[in-house]
Length: 343
Image 1 (cartoon, rainbow, N blue to C red):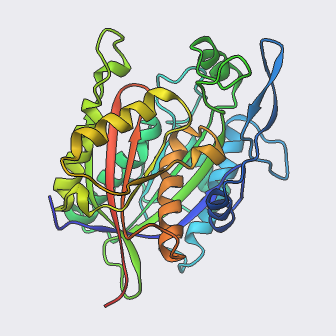
Image 2 (image 1 turned 180 degrees about the vertical axis):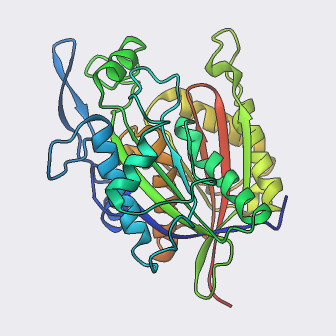
């Protein structure tokens, strides 16, 4: 439904190329990578990973909590302390079908984050969204519902994920999806956490609005007998444009979760060709995963943080951005963003 915008006010980001949103976004802009050898091997070679290096060697859920706390604190820093238990938190984590998924993501992670950050979030309106790479788009839709149906003024959306887990890497290696010397059609596994503060009423000053959301399902992702046609992503993009009340020709560039696998780049090209009916001279595509690795549920927040930084620092191609995401289970999502200068 057009006319229900949300404003992305601030962001926090913890990645392998920067432990804050400004540093990480600057590194992504410059094309900096920090892929290092992990403690995991594949066919006799050390796997490369986009590892987040912290002051202590945390692992597993404890590391996710620490990264989340850093990102949330950065995102909340520009604000006065919110009233106790008044701010909803929507926490995005790995999908439940992920091989090697860490225990306790749905039941323990949010409470552990509250303990680590020293803040209590809204007990009824907060929750965990186990949707992997499309989780942030689902959280945006839920945040909009909270703002326009429950009169909530602010919502914090956060995400954390790590593919640098033994059983997870084993599962992806068995499917031939990791980038190695023997396999060029794969991704570099990574880890990251991020957060964005959303507001219904942005106040004065320039701001980045989320104007439209769309969702779809790509059947070929789970059924090898179905040819890849880009139906799910095409539907998600068209729905997000209708929701925003604009057309694809109004958009200036794209930010995606593509992390190196040909399947997803082919899908993006198919969706673009099926959406455009007129020649568009330039429609650049940005993929932060080139720098920060495949970060699962965290890539959606990273994309929003990059869009916000590029808009505020005036290196974006233009003010209108299409962000699209896709999960291994076939779920597809798209969001239309627009940067607005004060009148």
